[in-house]
Image 1 (cartoon, rainbow, N blue to C red):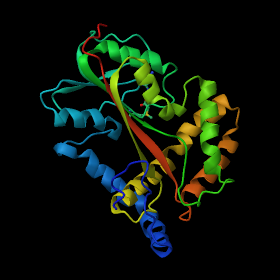
Image 2 (cartoon, rainbow, N blue to C red):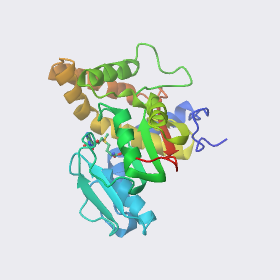
Image 3 (tube, rainbow, N blue to C red):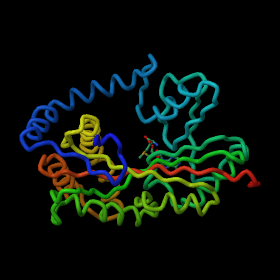
Length: 282
Ligand SMILES: C[S@@+](CC[C@H](N)C(=O)[O-])C[C@H]1O[C@@H](n2cnc3c(N)ncnc32)[C@H](O)[C@@H]1O
């Protein structure tokens, strides 16, 4: 069975040892070049060059639904230089009272927002208010827990310590990281109905024999290796009292563990969506 069906119940197939060596040796060592090329291609979607690939979700959505008016928001300026004509971007703090007209949206989408909100029930409540009756909320979120199905992740791996360390720091910051586990619960508690959840696995590293999973794994590895120091530095120094050197050692350990082709780790992602009741009045 192909691992492209990404349910959390399905094991991601693993490449043979000798194929793996070559995947990490050839593809990973040249991955900076090849993935940079992919990102460049990715940003040129629909003949447009996007400056910031973070913005692609709402630009993509606007391209896909030309009759919809799409508003992308973020606390920081992630505005690309060219956006589809039916899309606009606003710098907005989603933790403050939303100023959107009540019952004005058909759909509210949240993606990869762990560690950004102190009060998720309040956020979903605000989304409920902004949606028209019958409108949908959808939240795509990642788990911070590295897992493995074939026993290649040993108990003493720094990857096992990663999630509790990140969660502890985020807890001290007052904005939880472990929301993968609570998205569905909180969306139901906010009053949405017919709430559905789909969980799936995303490999880190090109260790799968499945072509799609292998490509996702390579992207994921690249994503971690590029970003890990940035988000770890702030959290660990500010909330855990670590020194810069301690963070660098920690990042080096995590990096080495992720690049070890013998460890077949993945993390889980979830998509939760639900409908505002037709009878709801905001
Ligand atoms: C992990 S990034 C994900 C970005 C984007 N949603 C994506 O999927 O690529 C988290 C984003 O949340 C934004 N953010 C943090 N606090 C926020 C807030 N209070 N209101 C709105 N955006 C916020 C950050 O600026 C950052 O771009």
